[in-house]
Length: 297
Length: 297
View (cartoon, helix red, strand yellow):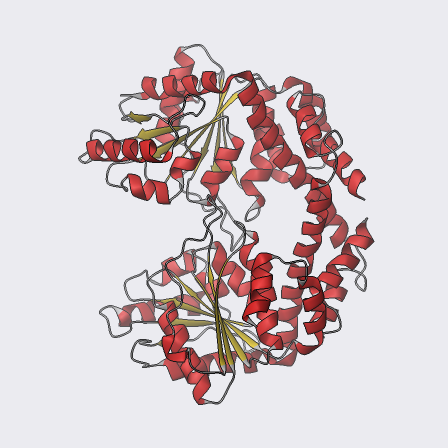
């Protein structure tokens, strides 16, 4: 499995064949996203969630995604998962991956790696991402259930709302809840949820759970909230989320293929030739784009 | 001109015709990007740069781009330009625009708005963006010369290097240089530049300039550094930067057109139908993407 995920990371040509073979074996795993700002305790919580699911006899996969620097293309390491307690457990699969490219990262490689873990028979896959803005949106689009971690003093409910956290969270966790200010953070978040999320029975209202991942306190409540969200979604809800995720993935792959065709055009009818015409004022960008589309279709 | 830029913001169908008519009138303006973290004084510096260019008799355009929230699609206002001193000057064109969509924003709409300001005869267009990570990269890809603002105490040279600032900056400005710590910030930045940028005469080494935009101190030195960078680039260098920018713009428009074709496919051969097949395990994402590409080409 590690070798298969390496194929994904490398964008290996054999990936097509592998994914074709895996297709019929997928669709079983419950994908749980764990995200939040740096320092909020994501890796510790991920490890605690793994422990909780393992105590229920579930097979668990963990995929930890590090965002790449958009500048260098290299991975900014630092938050790699520390889960030595699970490393000897044959029913736990742990994989860290750097995201590819500057934005295609999570939307491209992570769904494929999830597909590998899913096909390997994982009941639950925990997808841990460093949550800062855009990647929180991406994880919410990739997971069946998104757990957003906050810590006391890292911002009140209004700030969470401003940062868009309430729009992506299925479960809100105030981690490090033994610290000063935890009560206030919990209260603020609950108030923000009650103001911003419709209170009708067809809408899921993200619960706010207190936890101390480092000691395990409250982790069972987090897992119970995750399971409750899965029940709320039901078969149809899960299928809808996954269809949305698959559509994004397919569209991304198709656009990549079209982009590759564009890149393969000879200079004078290709991008470079057209760009030179635009810079010289002989062509406008729309007309140039039309010619490009004609050339690849 | 304001109406033309509104067409750009609205993505109006008439835009194609307008851009076609403007094509032969573009290529004159020097595009100067001004970016930096919130609170560093971008709007004040932009205003001061406008004053400096006006005193030289240049016609100046200003385009201030606010990033949209990736969550709501709405603009997070707050840093709109405050340039009332220039509002009565007929040779200064000022326009704020919210970026469109969550990432297509600057790469899509701003180059077109720049094209309008360019065709209107601006000698210089200042493109002001809230610089946080990704948008700094985008502004660097859009401007001929990128000015990155920092303030004392906002991070030393190593942090700037880590944040990728040195890779996009053509001119580094330590603004609010009358504050404590300015000397250290300047020294750190110069050291980082000397370590990271090759010291051969064919490579531009970003100068580090001290300024206090609010009083005008050092602004002439900033403008001189910008002009020096333009001279360094020369006609060929500017053409190369603009060709790169045009290529990105053309590719973006072409992919948008292809994406629209994908979206226009009927359900069963379209994205939704294929996504359902993938979720059901009857198709893998690559095979689905292949079918999508076949359908639109």
